[in-house]
Image (cartoon, rainbow, N blue to C red; front, side, top):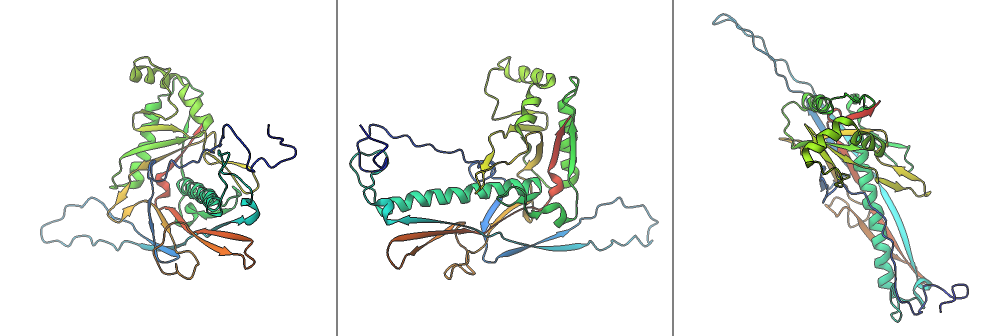
Length: 341
């Protein structure tokens, strides 16, 4: 029997089973999920976004040969955005490996390479969940730092607009949820003009979703859709009219201090167009700038680059992982904040 009080639980001892806890990693907006953002690498540390307002108006009838009204110039505005700098390091100490067995094994010794790969996976996971955090921030209009309060990028301020808000009076049993959804979709259509998109998706905080799905109108609509099978798992979402609702109850992350941050506020929801693109590209963009290493400057690099720095005394290897993401919603008024009352 393993004496946990007088021996290292990770040393070369006999074990019958190994249990590895894998934390939930939000990734719904990224590749493999909704793939909301057009993501690619760039060779500079900033990008410029140019906007030009289109003009459409009715033309008055005039006598043949008369001079018509001249079309005025459209205003063009260019804004520059700089990529963020995310750096996290990990050390692989020689003593971490000495006399340690492989996880789940009773006779295989851990190697430096195995420990390095283990920490690389952790390092990559930290960067990936931070990218998702920035995607959500860009969607909501404020890209926040890891503390959950410091604003790295306020898209409403940058584009000089205000957020559109629609209240759902879910305390009223007679509320027509489909009609309310049509109003939300119309707000998005009015903002996007001729921009095409696939559908309107709504990410709901836990309280908003739980209240919505218990509403009489929604219950009756789901009974009609599911043929009375209301015991089906609906956490992945449902569609009523123009809107597809999805629960984001588990979208939580921890910062460096160990505090839990909820990505989508529990009592709010956000409606947005999926697949919205103009001739110039997707309205949701993600760019990865070069990392500040000598062999990555002015180049197109992977989103995450990790370099190994060996201790001159050969006692450890430091893994330095850097990514430089920039996530933007170029049409922030096309995302509608939904409140409930």
